[in-house]
Amino acid sequence: MKSIIATFCVLAITFSLVALEQENKSGAGTFVSFRDGTLTIRGKSELHIFKQIGDNYKTYQNNDNGPGSRLVDTVDALSRCTQGTVFQVNVEDRVIIFGLDHRVIGTLESFADGKLNLLAADVPTGFVKKPAGNITLTIDPNTPVLESVDGSDLKFVGIAGDVLKKAKKGVLITARSEYDPAIVEVIEIGDPKRRIERYIGQTRGTVRGTFVSFKAGILRIRGKSVTPLAANEYERVIAARVPDHIPIVESIDGGEYQPTTADALANLKEGTVVTIRKVEEVLIEIRIGVPKKK
View 1 (cartoon, rainbow, N blue to C red):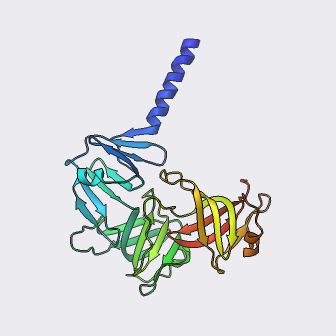
View 2 (tube, rainbow, N blue to C red):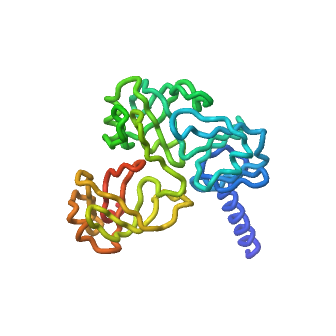
């Protein structure tokens, strides 16, 4: 009986290790390391390990200032990457694409039944379209939408289910996600002249932590990104200016979130859980407390 249990334990441990590592299978995630031809990226629930990476792969670096990607030397580019850079590796096609985040940029063809249809945008000289042609993306109707009007700064204008139905055909659309290319996290409409970009190492998107202070419109919490894949994020004090028009909601004793005012922040006890909801660097909501799961 003991030998059977021991054998089962060994099998369970072996299975767990396999589940935590995927070798030479297509995947996406954040950069961990590149050594001696082996690329390691961190996916949603496992490490992806790609061996014998070199000139046998075509590698493209995203244009962080607009549409398109640029063909780069594989070994040189991967040797200079920093932790947190996002990657897509297609083993079958021998293609690697990396950048600050996953993005698809194109002009709007249509939006219906949660399907966003785009035509890949023209790219600058020296870049190629990745992806190219007609593109269809599945969009959650609650995905936040930011808009730039005539080159102005991006501003939150609503959710995809409402905004995209009214958007004009041909307008420039950018669909972005931080870690998983299959899940679009934010939609941008238009082409802002000034962009506050996501840089590796900064706190990305929504952050949650414990209340430190709220003075002169500045909210400070001690916390980090709520995205577990942000391996390079470290806990620190995060400050955010809270304009008067930003919604503030509060969960009291684990109840549902209810609208409240800035006075609630001013009277908050140190250590209370606070969530700062953002897309890009655009603040969209402050949440006090956490409702109990039903």
